[in-house]
Image (cartoon, rainbow, N blue to C red; front, side, top):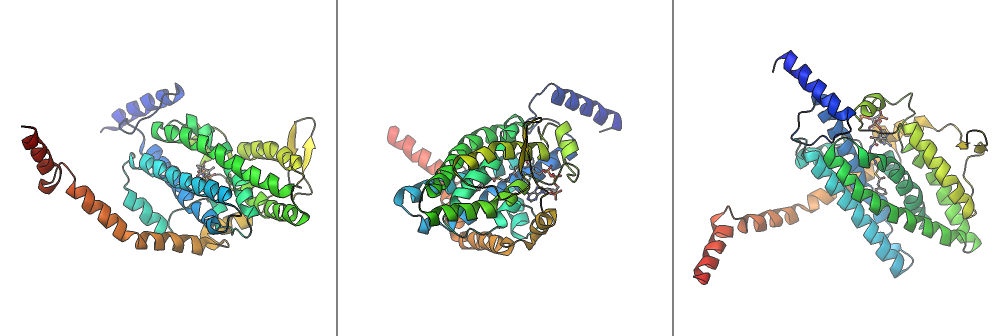
Length: 329
Ligand code: FAQ
């Protein structure tokens, strides 16, 4: 394609973005748009499935059958989110195997938040309330993102995330209303998850390398700092409502701006975790690799079954259809 033709296509593409049209997998798109989407959607997919691990740690120790059922359902939803996102990513011409390989080899990024340990049952409350809460704030704008498959996946994901957020908040509320020890457990979980949850929304706008271009492409609709402010404004009153204290002595409400002002975050800690040196990075990757290796026999069996029943193989569908036809005649 000549330079002139590419320029024309770029102009048409930019005009479609400006009109808020959805870009679909078979449409022409700039290579950088495609690569940026593969990067963000795959990181998002990896986050969903790695994100199952901290909560998976508590399934066998949930305090009641009801809590166990809800936690199981939530974790299963996260697996589903990973699958929608991997599928959306595959429409951009990258294979699932390549994506898994990037995760298992440690090349791919996934959300920093899932590299922290879950020490008590209250952490299940804190994750649902804060981590899913931050995820919703980040993901609601993504329901109107410019790439069609990503936007559509986000609609369902957001509906499920709101159930997750409520089940987490309900756990925190119950603990906060319980014995002094239970309230202390809830406060301790809030103390440990507050700052990582704020950092999960990404580096400051000044340090964010992708925001400017992603906003132009309407991949991102809000900047990292805007989302963080929204999260703080929404979450602080919820903590007050259940009698917990936000672990930030500098936090204060600004009557003029109507926003909470909060303290500086520990960005050194954030980058350490992103680079693989958080408390649980090694455990998370080795758990995923083990699950992949131990699941080989299941994938092989599923492939053998699919081949046997495929209409394209002689022993599968064709002979079955022939038999059915013979019986019908
Ligand atoms: N962790 O220029 P920016 C969930 C990287 S799902 C690790 O600002 P961008 C559900 C970033 O990739 C949670 N790395 O990047 C759930 C880039 O590196 P690169 C996941 C991070 O993309 C709940 C570099 O820093 N959600 O929680 C992080 O414009 C409970 C520069 O950053 C999504 O993925 C981080 N926190 O903005 C599941 C949502 N932040 O790629 C289970 C979709 C930044 O150049 C249990 N993603 N980095 O090597 C997004 O909205 C964006 O990608 C951001 C980052 C906002 C995360």
